[in-house]
Amino acid sequence: MQLDWTTFLLQIVNFLVLVWLLKRFLYRPVLDVIARRREGIEKALNDAREAETRAETLRQDYERKLAEQDSAQAADMARLGDELAAERSRRMAKLDAELAAEHERQLALVEKQTADAGRKAGDAARAAALNFVSRLLGRLSGAELDSRLVDMLIEDLATLPAKQLEALHDAAAAPDASLQLTTARPLSEADQTRLLSALNDALGRSLPMTKQIDPSMQSGLRVGIGPWMLAASLADELVFFRSGARRAC
Image (cartoon, rainbow, N blue to C red; front, side, top):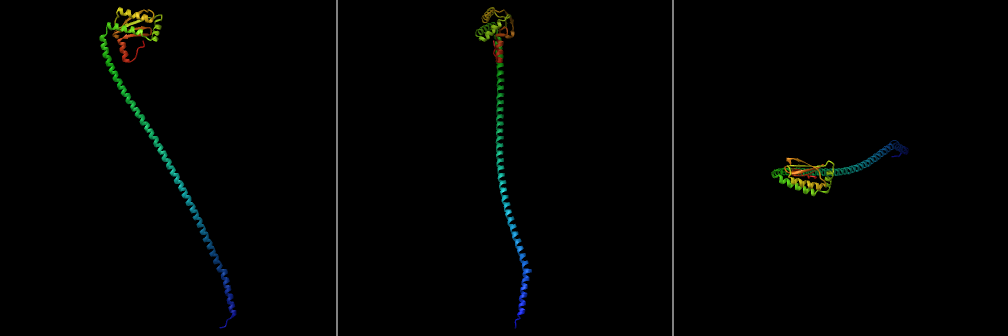
């Protein structure tokens, strides 16, 4: 077999041309496509990594905000609990104060009712005793008792306080001053004399005397000097015991 070098050279040239053509029109575009796809894949991977980074950032931010929200909620719950406890304490204190005030009011009401009942019972007993004493003294009243009451008035004159005695002196010094004697029955001459002498000594002067009979006095006498009154009678003493007040003079 004989080698045709010309044909061989031409085949080589054809092969080289084919290789150039393949490289020029097929292999390079394929490489470009692969490069672009690789670049796209890299870009997609980068986008995915960026998206993952953003997602991680968002997750961390969400967890941080969630933690902050939980912390704020816990603080709000704690504050609400404190406010509820304070409000409960305030209302309990108010309720205790109201109960204490109501207890004091009820206690004062019971004490007042007890005191009223005691006072009414005392008044009733005092009235019954006074009625009894009034009836008893009414049976004992008479000239002898009148004479004894004159003695009591004379004794009282001797022990009058200086201020009251001074007031009687002023009343007796009036130009139209006089003595108004009121008795349950006419006094004996001796009693009138003793009484008038004691009055003159106490007043430091002699005054004219008018007489009046008042049977409601039961026994005793009253002596008026201007605006003042000296008294020693069963009626006045019984009134004194009924009212609990004391005669000024």
